[in-house]
Amino acid sequence: GAPDQPDRFINIPLGISIGIAEIFLTVGISVLVKFIAPDFSIITILMFRYALCLPLLILVAIFQHGRAAFAVSQYRILAARTIAGLSSLTCFYAALDLMSLAKVTSLFQTLTLFITFLAPFLLNENVGWRRWTAVIVGFSGAIMVISPTADGWSSLGVAFGFGAPFFGALMLVMLRKLGRSDNPASTAIWYNGTGAVMFTLLFTWQGETLPMDQHSIVILVLIGILSSCQQFFIAL
Image 1: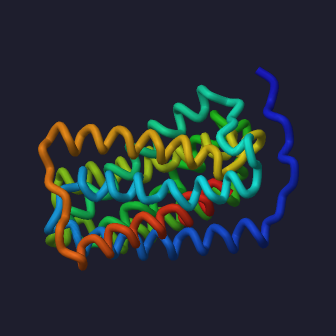
Image 2: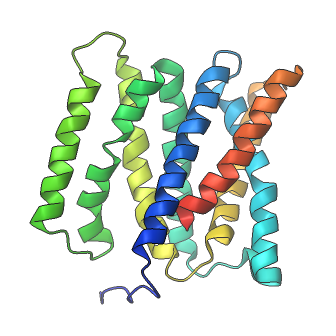
């Protein structure tokens, strides 16, 4: 097939700034999830995260685009982005429940390797030898930080830990395609709406119980609010 159309614009300083902000938000959310994970199941946390993420995203989309707030044009790519995003976040939260935040975060740094590998095939982007060298050096550094021979590793946790960056890379590649035609807030609404419905059904099916103490509710609400900002930043 023919290569994708060129981007409407490229703003590297703004993109880097938004990317750094998204990283800080991700780390903050991860700390909150790690803190509350011993008291609640991953299904419960993900249900609140997806459901409470929606209101702010919907308000932003309606403010920006009015009646076209929910409009998307690339349905198949949106479906692939949604599946990859749900898989990545589920793996990430499951890994946090099994291993320390530092180990899970270190494993997630392999995301760049997966993205660099997938970009030429799925985006027709040229990856030169300098980028490959930088990725290989960075990946080697991540392995040194991970230190696989150290204590505290879980085989299942490692599987989830590598699943998160792999599916995350697929999600980012799909977001790159969606960003060329669709509004970031709109795609984030469809993704998070799907997650909210799916994990609410799982929550009901598993017979989970809602948190009753105010402290837990505040943390879950905060996870949802921060996640809405993080979702918009990562799409943008």
